[in-house]
Image 1 (spheres, each protein chain N blue to C red):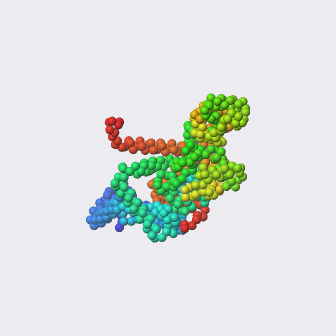
Image 2: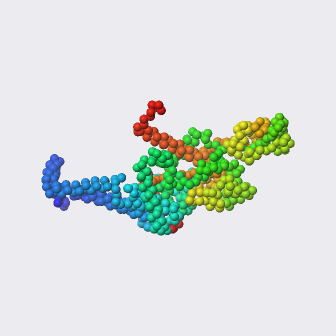
Image 3: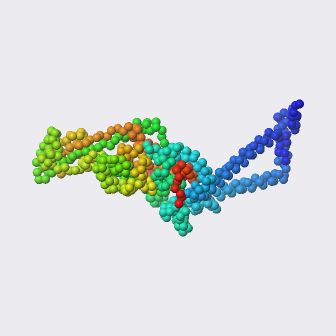
Length: 320
Length: 255
């Protein structure tokens, strides 16, 4: 037996227009009930007032009567974070919060409240415009803020390789130079000193032992370079004139006599390892660091441009 | 009261369903925000002793970690010896002892992040450069001197280096290089300033080979971690600290 269909208020032959008329009639009757209208209006007004009050009283800068869960105190609406309080207490007392007594806790909290008050006062008195340290701190803070994404972003291996190829000259080992630097003290007879130095250089070139030759011609080892030194260090110790001659030679070679204020020098090269291009695999860490630093600089430059574009900067004619 | 004359049961069901969904969402949001607040009200180091809140924080922290920290530390928290990013699943803490409050501090203020509360007391000088250290004057080291210091470190590692080089290395470690100042006379490191222990087998950079150690001495090291204080909410920072804390084996007690 067929199941009876539920009875509809509208006949099965009713059109969508009939449905619409019925609905409109009902809505009209419902909304014109005066008691109901008053109640709905009252509820709406109360809800609106509560919403507005909540928004007003919890907006930034307005007074609040509660301390948010992440804070230990509020100072003119600014929170003193619990994490900061714990760290400062540990730093000052040298013990965890649980071991600190009430006096220590109170002392640290008072100090932090005072700090917050002073910071707020500093902003009121516009310290950033007069104190160079405050200005530097603000500049550093903004630079860090705009480049934080560069620090956290890890480039792909392909991006690093492209960067490495573009800047290949930056990635090489450090050159190492080892020399024995002999001087023939000029004293009162510079001509003889120069002759001795030239003779010593010739003897070493001919294959004689440099130490024996130096002793024979009264040359003294200056000891300016001990063992192998990185190129820049050897340059500092030898001076430009001697370094530029020595670095061009190979191990076992010797310079001619080079006249210097303290007498003629002869430089014998014991080691010379020029810089060698570093493979990507070995230079990867340096490449990553450089990549990030470049990205940070670009982000800071973009921020600078953005700020300049929206700023109203007037420069006096004489300084344009 | 019949809201709509002629309204079918289907419409009533839909209305009831929507109401249920809305109520569920409101209920979940209330639970979520009140649990977050309860988590934040606790002192950081007390959180692990409250299992329900700790579980909640660890679960929340997992996604925060993946969004903000995994790009460097890896989703498995294994770090990278190539990039000098520390592993977070062992007990070898570069800074502090692995307490939740210490991890939270690093998440808040980072390492060498320019904020005055950040960890930034020392760097590893680059002894292969003309001016090895920006903070105070140190003389550069020659490659031979660097090699001697490496020999001394190898001895502390239990290897068998050339003892003449070790003798020279000890002197350089204590005097010219001033390595003892951060790494300690016993090479035990200093977890207050982030100076790693040199006598264990855990290496932050490289594999502990002579070449890798020499590279660190020559080029210097200065790892960074960004600060997240103004980037993510205090609740998320507490949660991510709890997540990292939960991954380290048996952290020391809070006191």
